[in-house]
Amino acid sequence: MRSRSRKKTPWDGMESLTPTQEFLQKHYTERYEARHPALSDTGEAAMINSFPPAKCPYCGSADFIRYGTDGNGIHRYRCSCGKMFRPTTGTIFDSRKISVSEWIEYCLNIFRYVSLNADSWNNRNALSTSKYWLEKLF
Ligand SMILES: [Zn+2]
Image 1: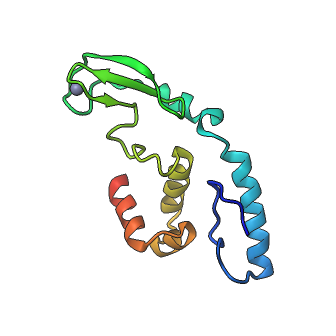
Image 2: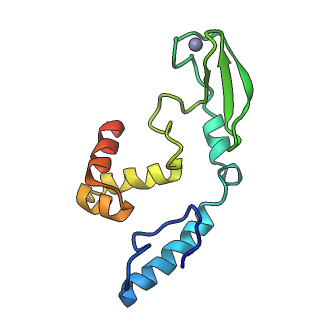
């Protein structure tokens, strides 16, 4: 039984793996662990925080203040309209289901002309999810 962590491979839950799949899974897992420690440890939060928002994504006002950080160390802001937001709010990185690094990996796949079918297979998403991401991206 595999550990229940954030890392996942295209082969999780598969009944039997070929030697190639086993090799790739092991390799991927090692690489994943090297690249995906907690968000706050990766510098990803710092990278996101280096892009302070210019305006409130809800009302467009520039009248907002820093308001602590979220669980990932990402800055939160509170606008005079009462809404809270982060630098990623309203961007393709808004969804914290996938990290920025995973997004970048997805984008690189797209730009290398990996097909949506292959990508959704790789990410174990429904094809509609890959299509949705593609629409978000562009
Ligand atoms: Zn606002």
